[in-house]
Amino acid sequence: MQEQKNNKDIYILGIESSCDDTGIAIVKNGREVIANVVASQIDIHKLYGGVVPEIASRNHVMNIDGALTECLNRANMTLKDIDAIAVTYGAGLLGALIVGVNFAKALAYSTGKPLIAVNHIEGHICANYIEFNQLEPPFVCLIVSGGHTALVEQTDFVTRKLIGTTTDDAIGEAFDKVARECGLEYPGGPNIQKQAALGTPCIKFITKPHDKNGYNFSYSGLKTAVINYLHNADQRGEVVSIPDVCASFQKEAVDQVVEKTVKACKNYGYYKIVLAGGVSANAALRETMKAEAAKIGAEVYCPRIGLCTDNAAMIASRGYFDYVNNKNIADPLTLEAQSTLPL
Ligand code: KG4
Ligand code: ZN
Image (cartoon, rainbow, N blue to C red; front, side):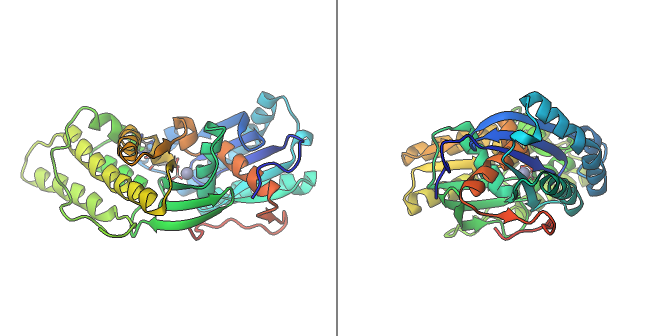
């Protein structure tokens, strides 16, 4: 699978609307960000303690046109300069995805540009090609986000095999739920990290490792153990240390993915570990992964924070690799958003 079709520079317009961020970006040759606009809705969803799907869809409708104009202005380009349009068509909130998909279909149809259907988690992986100009597959990749926890073997730019996934909740979902129970604002992940830095991991929530010999993850037991700990303390009128609870939860959540990722790297014979998705912004995860990987001589790649969380530059990057390999080209009249996609 190749990286470049010919010597001409290729500009892909990326569109992302799978959750609560409306993203439009232009990326050159899959690696260089020309413009990356993210219209965040965090301040709105914060009021409800989490993403409200209908409100997310409505705000995508309000933001998407302006985000495109802003992106083209920042890039000093017009749609004529774009080679193809890449859009997240799944997985995510259906109503939110439909806004981006329909917008992309209309753009592709009216301009005659090719339309590329991008799987959101494959976009997350590609954020690393933007951050690390020389990075190439094969590698082992850990995708950790609000909706996914997956360990994959990326064999070339457009092919991957699933090694393991969560048997219940996604890791980001657990961060967000635990944060809410601790009285912290949405999005929970960054706030757990802040509280954890003030405490010590002195509470043991889970005593038995999950899927000891395999590569699958579980976060529901850990999440429930933390919630029960908080409720029991409340009923007994005991004061709990939220920083200690956060530090202990974060350590157990991080150790689980780190242990399995390093084991997979060793057993599959790779020396590159790539991190992707919103939870890979977590400092404890990045540090622990680097320390454990160093023990087996493996290198860890992780994008800057702004490329870990949802954005359209990563979607444009993946769109580029699909475009040059003639993969996932979609029909602008019939492409449909999918709330779930096979891993
Ligand atoms: O990739 P992403 O932006 O959206 C999805 O595809 O789901 O990931 C969002 C998730 C949320 O659960 C959020 O709490 C988590 O990423 N997150 C973090 C951190 N920053 C974002 N989790 C732990 N530590 C962080 N610093
Ligand atoms: Zn995401």
